Every structure is written in structure tokens, then in C-alpha cells.
Image (cartoon, rainbow, N blue to C red):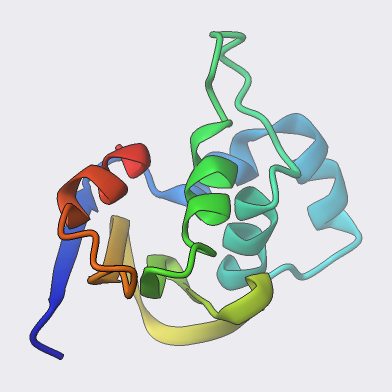
Length: 130
């Protein structure tokens, strides 16, 4: 596809699964569940956990990214962290994949296609992710 922009971003922090597991409630739930890294990423995309920093806007960006990834000009979005990978499809469907080897940090990938209406400003449309 010639009319597209592909963006890959690596956050070298602890990673989503490790951050989610730090949350006290997640620790309690893990006692009763064997949630995979991809399931933890999926829960973070849905905003089902918050960080314990008590700082404003912490834990809100992944749901915003998830909502933005469902726009028509986003052809593909995936997120890989720990041993989990989530691919966001049409209508917000999330395919979860578990890998044998872990990735330290979080890798984000977007494929943004040219707007069919003729809007050439793909960069403007993608600003909302960052």
C-alpha cells in the first residue's frame, strides 16, 4: 500500500504486564486467575486498571490509543509487551497472542492509510495518538 504511514514506537519502561501486576487488585486477582500477558494488555486497552501513582492522566492513554485505533484510516494497530501481543481489528475486536519469549518494554505499531475522502494530512490525523 503506497499511500500509508507506518509508525513503530518502543517504550523501554517496565512494560504493560509488569505495570499491571504491580497494582494491588491485580495481585489479588492473579491469585485466582492465570491471566496471560496478552490478557493483561487487553484489560489495559479497555481501561480496566489504573496505575498507583495517583498522578492525573496515568493509566488513561492506552484506552485513548485503543479508541483512536478503531478509526477508519487505521488499517492496523498492534501492541507487544512481555509475552503478550494484541492486534486491534475492526469494530474494536482484539486478537490476543502469547509468545514464547518476552519483550522488555512495550512495542507499538500503527499502519495509517490515506483518508479515502482525499485528505492528504495523514500526519494530522495521527497526532491524536501521541
